[in-house]
Amino acid sequence: MTALLEVEDLRVAYGKIEAVKGISFSVEAGQIVTLIGTNGAGKTTTLRTLSGLIKPVAGRIVFDGQPLARVPAHKIVSLGLAHSPEGRHIFPRLTIEQNLQLGAFLRKDSAGITKDIQRAYELFPILGERQKQAAGTLSGGEQQMLAMGRALMCQPKLLMLDEPSMGLSPIMMQKIMHTIVELKAQGTTILLVEQNAQAALSLADQGHVMEIGKIVLSGTGSNLLHDESVRKAYLGED
Amino acid sequence: MNTLPQQLANGLFLGSMYGLIAIGYTMVYGIVQLINFAHGEIFMTGGFGALTVYTSLPDGTSIWVALPLMVIGGSLVAVLIAIGAERFAYRPLRGAPRLAPLITAIGLSLALQQAVFNWYPKADNALSFPQLPGGPFHVGSISIQSGDIFLVVVAVICMSGLAAFVRTSRTGRAMQATAQDPDTAQLMGIDTNRIIVIAFAIGGLFAAVAAVASGLKYGQVKYDMGFQAGLKAFTAAVLGGIGNIYGAMLGGLVLGIAESCASAYISNIPGMEQLGGGSWANVWAFVLLIVVLLVRPQGLLGERVADRA
Image: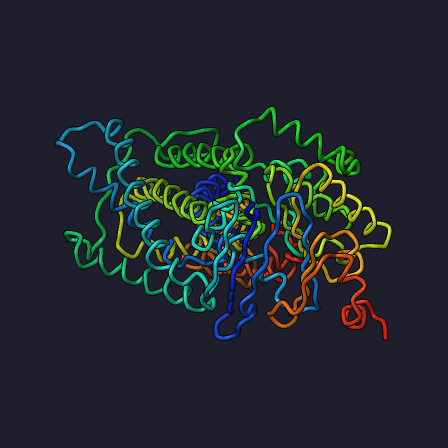
């Protein structure tokens, strides 16, 4: 069986500076795969390249059997690849409901959209309570929920989450991580980028450690979690 | 003639025109953060487009038949030039430092002016524009020209149409999303290039409508008419809060009314007898801009940019 997402020798550069220096990995349908690593490792650049916001210098991206490298960003969504960006990037002056509707921008089935908005409110009840409120007034954790809910609105085959735990309280972070597991149980495939290696590895099927543009270590989530060098470098142990 | 209601009415007419042109500056700025300094010239080409339609109609055509055709012809010209400018002058510079598209805009503005000056027949002087018959009409102590009625009617139609379009249509929602966060808008599946083209097209359309109104009001079009009108409309857009369409409308009206009242009344203030009249109108318009920006740097209806983070 071929993977849902296959990345081969991907290289991305900003001008002359190469941010991603030839990485390869794949995501099987139904899995949670995580990319961990410090700031500047190239994790966010990788996701932005996958969703078409940045064009790669070289390499192959195949999603659901289709090569992506030359597809413009706004068409990639329609193939079933959703991206919840780093820093949440909700539309601050639109309401929560309008943000969710934008997540379904390309869908034509208004009944299905209404149903999925209800589903997002069930997943995150706080959003349902504030549906007519401007999204910019939400707290960081609530904005993260909205960003995730919005990404789910396109009924993605693959959901890419960039730093969903960034800036959240421990309780809020637990809730987000719990939601990720729940989404997996419902059949969503997830590619998770995190600086919080502990949290990400403990729920991932596969993990890849990135360092300055390269994947330096790969393995199952629990193997990496117990790996000596990972524990030293990312989990703060001596 | 110098009654307050008359001055307010004059200001309202002038302000409606500024507001219509200001929409083009504010929508483009709101979406691509570019000050399209060629917008005044897009306005001007709209006027020449309309005049071309008028002169090519058979003699004796009723102005009521000609007027809609002139609006359509002028809009077509202005929209095509606006879209062309975006596609061939600004889009290639999308990722460049801000100064590059700004200088391009100034260059395009000069190029359009000179093209009309050199190639449009007899355009080195003002060309006379048809007038609407009837009028002036009198409402109480106010006297209104028929051209001004056209101006106010089209301004109300355009502005309320635009407000409804942005608030309720799917494309309008996509425009709001693109203005607030263009990268994320693409992640939603919005073709932001298309949205940018639409913003330029709406700006061109409104500018052309304003140009026809201006031609009817002043009875002429001239190759350099876009300079002053564009500068005032840009001032109106900044005054109202650039990027905000309601701000452009409000800024236009405030500027128009301030200008007409200042030229009528400033000279009544002891010691300022020399500073009234039409020749000082521009001075007061820019004084108003400076005062407003000192108190509210984001403009009357502008939003602080802080909430972008």
